Image (cartoon, rainbow, N blue to C red):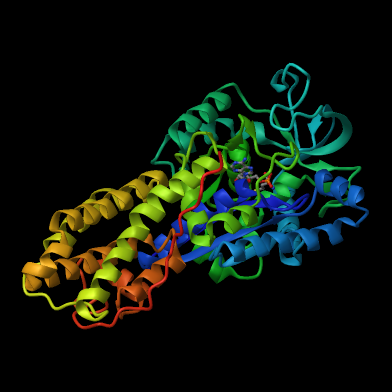
Length: 516
Ligand code: ME8
């Protein structure tokens, strides 16, 4: 059994989750579910990032202690992921004791190896990003381009990590697949941006704060706390037992993929690997940075205040359609503007008209002509083979490469093929002329739909089960899917087979009016 360790960023708890957070988390969930169907032993981690200036300030504004705010807000994240049926195996909070101890262990190790030193530093700090920002990177108003706020001047005596000495090594681990610490940075355009920046040279980074006591104390100088980003990155190893569970750590680390948006790719492809190499820990294998959902061209963020929440989408579309729509509307990689109207259009076309209509018409025909049972077959089922061909050609490659909109297109193509076949067969005419052929046709619609449903599981786990039951398929859907993906043969048992009773029909995707 192969292991597969996948992570989302751990999200700041200064406010409630929005669909930008949901986007990464749903994408990670789709991959995790897909890998489980491939037979992998998956560890899927998400969580919350709870230290730093930003959390402190939010707590102050709300009249709470930082810990109270973290306890309340991390629950909102947990609830959102429960609502969206996210199958995470771990949920880490950076205020967990185990994590805090791991951070101190790593800091001590880096210090003992001479990779940390003290120096006075003055710079511009963006609280939204929780990072120092160079003057040349500010926008025309002197603000952070992501958060549209002026950075604050910070001047302190801090501890620094010798990032600069890893410069050449970092270029090599990204460029050279033969390097034992090779990281694949994706998509390629962003990889090139990272390499370009690395070639300009690296400066050492400050990794502690004096004035901020809401953080993890440095083990070698308790008057300072660990910089929130260093604290946060270490979550990926503390969650799998770097300290305290050697067996689990060695099983799952290095992570197979860290998923995130482009805003934090630098931290994951430069700072994180340097910290790991410095602490003699193997480096994660892949990072993938997607773009931002934008609303009227602006990044959606808590700080800007143009937020859509997961609950709003679920209320309008339902859980599984929200999962499907979130990743299929725009390609995973570039930025993309979204709107309720575009989401509704896609819902109506892909789900109400194509998939919903297919399930509804096959069920109704079987009800009318075959007493709500799957009919008996006497000829070969060619349609299901055609559908298998379409899926084999497009599905796995696109899902492996995180091109979920292409995976969705591939699924729609397969669904359309069955709908077209129904039009061509005209079963309502066959019912009067050739009932044997009618039985064959309807049987093949069920089988071909079942096959599509196995591929829908990662996107729409609950609706897949519903269609499976409606179609009278009688095997455990997950077990049947695993078997199918292992040997790519439609199993003799488990699919809709002759004489199986259909489920009680319900409309899965009611059409939604588009607001003018
Ligand atoms: O950066 N479009 O947390 P964060 C798409 N705590 N994705 C978006 C998005 C948008 N408009 N807005 C947010 C942090 N995201 C750190 C991470 S990890 C060790 C520490 C998603 O709450 C996207 O995944 O600001 C982005 O990278 C992440 O939320 C940032 O979440």
